[in-house]
Image 1 (tube, rainbow, N blue to C red):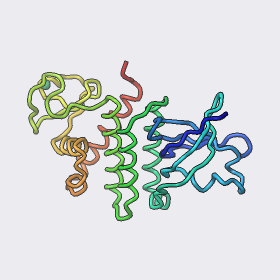
Image 2: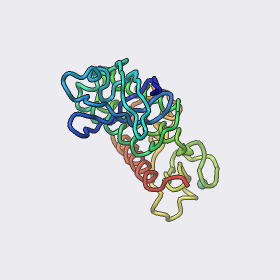
Image 3: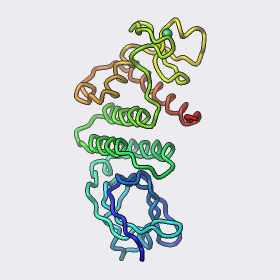
Image 4: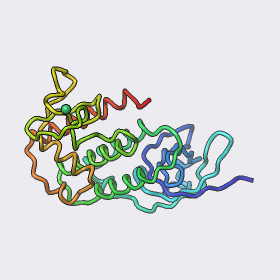
Length: 243
Ligand SMILES: [Zn+2]
């Protein structure tokens, strides 16, 4: 007899296979990442269709077969409709999905990631957002996600000598995983010069202080600098996984 499993999860990727099947990548509360097949789900008569959409939070029921998991029932809990309707928000959601897909390969429960996804998609779904805030939500997810999976950056003291940081002379090191002081920066070109606003954004993100973060006034130079070090830190850790 088949065993039925029931859980909740965020659908972050889908891929069509065969004539009418679709494989969903779902980050679930109970099992972490799962790949679940919706058999004949692309047929107009499929009863499963309505309950499982990209970026929705759904309750899903499935059976574990010999090689794969098959979807047996699904109910949408939260559809995040404002994300689906807005191309900018949708683009951010795909970036989040790509980060998940690249770092989370196996099945492993992680409540922190589940909560972070719920929080991030909830913020993104807020219909009053301006473009810089939409970008900021992506980085909010990115840094907190990287921290949860083991890439938490050191931002309080110099990551090399551990001394207090001077706000007028700051550098970021992907290799060492954090902010470093002028003395330690030497002539290594790997270290990127940053400023105190960049560190301020990073601290607020990691403190999850969204109230202050969303109202923070930062000039365009610092915004771009922050984006650059964030993208580089992601790229660096994608290609140099923890051993
Ligand atoms: Zn130092």
